Every structure is written in structure tokens, then in C-alpha cells.
Image (cartoon, rainbow, N blue to C red; front, side, top):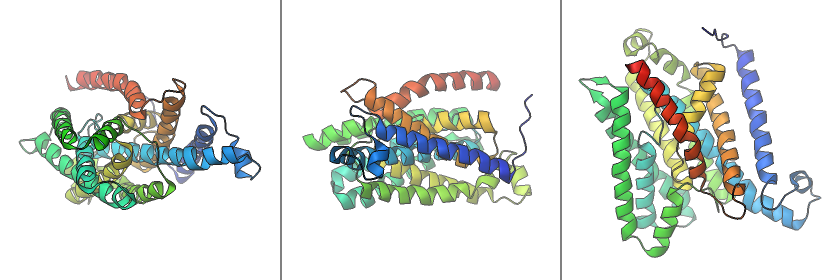
Length: 338
């Protein structure tokens, strides 16, 4: 059996510093690489050409920043939900939370239209409400005789995803042609054509939710011992659940409103981080945040350059990575349950 080193402030700082440096290098690489190579250092030092500056500052940098925010948020939400529910397969996309957020965002687009105010205020709020309602329904369906069953919860999420998908297609059929085309491309997961202002607005949503989730790290560690043991140690279990559910819904709603349905980030990243650094949520949550940001930055880079002039939706890349990984986890958990 592998013995994990005890978490100390020095180890916490060292691991997070390495992940932060890797994230910074990943973002610089993503800004430089593309159909047209950009000399990032020359542009930042004021010696680059106007063309390079335009490509970097108006196209790539906002996209790379948004990828980091979305990836970090989804990974943090996945790690928090896995710890809260005691289900290693818990993930916003698989549990149906992203589907509910997407339904709320689509309704916001159709009813409220587009524009800066709608994108920065109405759509994240509508998507967060949809995510919160979805989480409440799925959690209720996952409880059998007062106890939460992980496999029932997962099945409820899959069924709920299919239900929200049908509702989204129904709403899309009633939208005008321009809205319908935009919604369909957005649902596949896209990080294109986003301004600095919109990216900053989404960052505020994610930052507030992230602070709430990170503050529950110690409580999530105690919840791993079971509800009764956690209550005996002074944890208000219901308050922690409400906090994690609300913060996760706010976070997922905000990122889905700008990126669409990007799945499996919240499944892959927390598991890899847990294998590398252990299951202590004081390290797992911030490490998942940084690692998720790096993961989606690289996934978006692959989506941009893999097929040359044809750009893949980033949700396709994460699904190709996450599908086999989910099958592996499902088989492993199936053996454990049996």
C-alpha cells in the first residue's frame, strides 16, 4: 500500500507552485501556437508586429484565459461533488448539472436575446438557476430510503441529461434560424469569439464560487468518514451540502453560459490529481483548479490545430479523452460494488 506524505504548508505551497507555473507555460504556448505563429514575448515587450499584436490580444489571449477559467471551474466543481457525494463518478456533465445549466442558458438566449448585458448577467444567472434546480432533482432521485446510492445517483443524472437534451432541442426548434445555429454549435462546447469584458465577468462568478468551495475543504475531509462521524466532529452536514450544491451550481452555470457543454473535465482531472497528490481536499481542490485550467487550455489548443484549417469543438476533444476514462472508472467501481 502506498503511504501518502502528510500534508504540510510547505508541501501544499510546492505542489500548487509547480501547477501554477505549468499553467502559465501552457497559456503562453497556447497563445503562440496556431495556424499563424505569434511571437508572444515580442508582442508583450512592445517589439512585435501589429498583426501579431492583433492576433494575440484580440483573438488568442481572451480565448486562452477563458479556457483556463472554464477548465479550472469544471475541475473544481467535479472534485467538490465527488467529495460531497462520496461518488468517484460524480461530475457536472454526467450528473446532469451541465444539462440543466445549458437548458437555462438556452431559455435565456431565446427569451432574453444577446448583447453584453444579457451575456454577462442574464445568461449566467439563468444557467445557474437551471443547474441548481437540476442538482436538487438529481439528489432527490438518488436517495433511496433516506440514503444516497452512488449508482442510482449516476443513473438519475444520465436520464436527466437525456430529458434536458430533449427539452433543449424542443426550445431550439422554436428559435429563429440564426439563434438555432448558434445554439447547436455552442452546445458542442466552444470558446471562440469572447471579449475581455465577458471573460472578466465570468471570472467574477467563478472566483466567488471557488472561494466558497475551497472554504469547505476541511469539512469535505470529515465527510469522507461518513455523515454520522462528521456530525460528531462538529460538521453541520446539511449546511455544507447546501453550500457545495449552491456554489457548484453557480460555477457550472457561469461556465456553461459561455462555453456550452464541455464534459469530463470534472471527472478526469480530480482523479489524476488524487492519484498524484492524495485525497486531502485542502490540496485536492486547489490542485484540481489549476490542473483543470491547464487541461482545458491544451484541449482547446488541440481543437484549434489538430485538423489544420478546420476547428473542432473543444467539447469533442474532452469527450474523446473522457469517454474511455469513464468506462475504465465504471468497470473499476463496478468490481468494487460487487
